[in-house]
Amino acid sequence: MAAFPFLRWLEPAEPAAWCRSALSQEASLEAAVDAVAGQLSSKEEADLALVFVSSAYASDLPRLLPLLSQRLRSNHWLGCVGGGVVGTDPAGVPRELEREPALSVTLLRLPGARLHPFQIDTSQLPDLDGPAEPWNDLVGTAASASASMLLLVDPSSPAINDLISGLDYAYAGVDKVGGIAGQHSASHGSLLFDGSVCTGAVGCLIEGAWRLDAVVAQGCRPIGPVFEVEQAQRNVVLEVSLGQRRNTPVAALQEILTALTPEERELVKHSLFLGVGRSNFSLSSSSKDSAAFLVRNLIGVDPRNGAVAVAERMRVGQQVQFQLRDAAASSQELRQLLASQAEREPEPLAALVFACLGRGQGLYGRPDGDVSLCRAAFATVPIAGAFCNGEIGPVAGNTHLHGYTASIGFLVPQEPVDPVASAAEAAA
Image 1 (tube, rainbow, N blue to C red):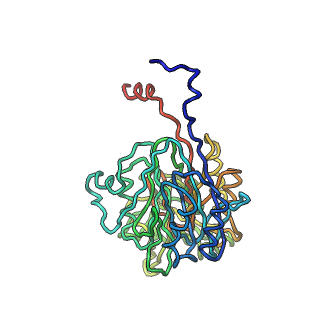
Image 2: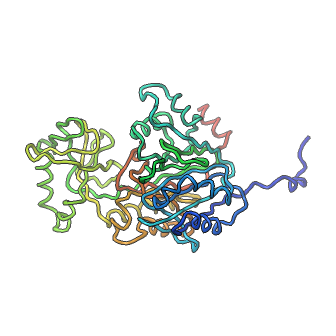
Image 3: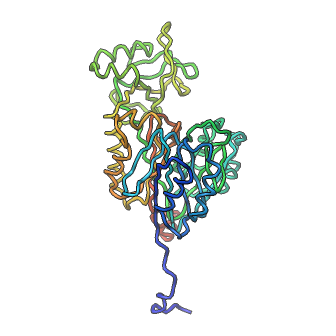
């Protein structure tokens, strides 16, 4: 029987999406929980609760989720300890709270979303050369191409890069955003998952009507030309070339130094990195495309042969470029990335910020450096997150573990798929 249009008002209305975020700086855990519960004052059940807490509460961490769940309702709980906490205060102002007690709680209602929270024992990962199914079993489901993933890892976890590579293999095309949780001296882990504290990795695969759009700001600017690696052993670069000229990396850097300003030469002493090309395609000798490189730490120099050691396995033929990190470059890059995100439709429901411990006041010389740029681009979007020991996010189509980076996930509605159009496209 056909439905009568005048009876549609009897049908239940589609629930509205909402995000409610709270932040507390109370010194005791109980007072912090009371403060965020009072700010949220919600009797509605959330689909997902995200909890970010400073290491100041580490000894009381096993009590945190039980206390919160007595006052707030959510189907799933997920979070971690941070080296600092990002949250939105009662006045709607985003804050970065470093080296002080802080608790940030965000409740999300996501109609039409399919959420798959997961917990992974990182001591027993599947073979990277094997099929994808064992990785799907870890997460508990396979994924559609339009899915995205929030991923948090305990700092004690082994094989973190293997974990990221395996998830990238099993969930190709899925944006993954998150970070490595903060360290503390207590005997338990740094991750929060559905009522308990744990180690390993936790996360949530998001499908259906919602997704995370990833923005990754590496915070560096290139200096000098793009070189090609001519000789390398594991993570050590022995020789580079520029056209027909070959040189050691140290000699190549010394030539670059002569063209720098005194201020830039001073930065080289403590803020020098190496950009490692993410493809084998030739890049311009003065490339400004930060997405073309993965910024890696320089961890050592051999003065005997001019070689440099890099926090990345290197290979012959790879393209590299020296990079400098400073507040101006970091601000400019993040501002440009956020402006591009702001041009997209629709506006995010929430922003999740995972920033390196090396950013914050240490980089900008003032508080709230990254979140103030987020607020300038998104005037009313709640912002939450943590300062991490390593940030997870995509660069040039692949997920990487970063340093000195801000990896941001914007929670946005997924455009509905037209089944007729999809069928026609598949047939074509």
